[in-house]
Image (tube, rainbow, N blue to C red; front, side, top):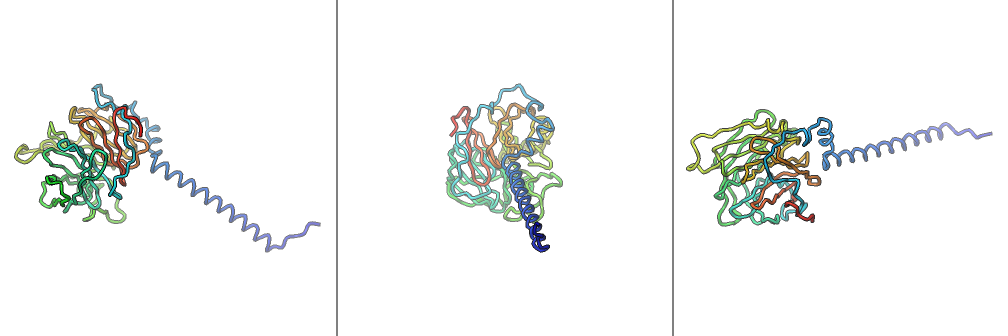
Length: 334
């Protein structure tokens, strides 16, 4: 005769089995959730699925027959090198052709940096009376244009000539505010949004075509947007009395499959645009009519925020929190 288990022991065994099953299920869900987070945050699988499902890849986008940089030839020469002295918030990037150096910005606290071509910091300038600075463009003559994401402003500033780490006070700097409507939120003095407000929906990047005096600015998403401002970047004594703002966002729909835009650069030789995307991990080149010339994948570059094109065709990219990348045509991988 089999012994009969007491009801109390039977109940405890049943509870134990249920507890073990619950713990195993919860553990599997945690592992699965973390795997999905890594796949979306660092490998942007959701955007790849979207582009595959919607058919928005390079084969379906408007193509140009113009020669360009041939971005597909570029290879990493320096990959993921930490920028010493920077802990976080490294954002926009520009190339100073006059002094053969790079100019970068940190959005919080608003700071302008100068870097050598190996990504080493050579100067640091706190930006007073500016906040949430996300992009920078070099205008020539030691002048730069800066974009504030939250306020939707473009500011013009002159860099210190002596190379000292002096602050730049932008209280009286020439500025232009673009009214992009809903989707942006104001920032406080340190560039932080109020709790619960959405970020990264205002102006995100800026580039300059010196030959034609044209500034290009991009809005990251919700929706993505591209604007061209003619006649405002030159010094007041050289600039015309009026300037024009054009909405070129249709170019993005017909030629750029990226789901967001984090930076923009202009090739001074051709006037072509280079559009950087963090979420899609890509760099795309457009001609002056908005047709796609080429592009390259930046898989493995997390949160790419700024791109600059050197005089010799070298590409420089920075990503948050503090990483530096350099690409050259046919370069040997590091």
